[in-house]
Length: 50
Image (spheres, rainbow, N blue to C red):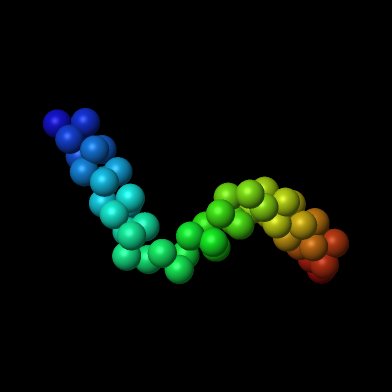
């Protein structure tokens, strides 16, 4: 049963890619650079926290 839910969720998410194609570039950017952006944000928070 859990496999069916997992499979259905997988297909639902992948079908959204067809309908929301304008997000593809944003998602690729975030997939590639999110760890660096998170690190920079963490450093900024660390040094600006009062």
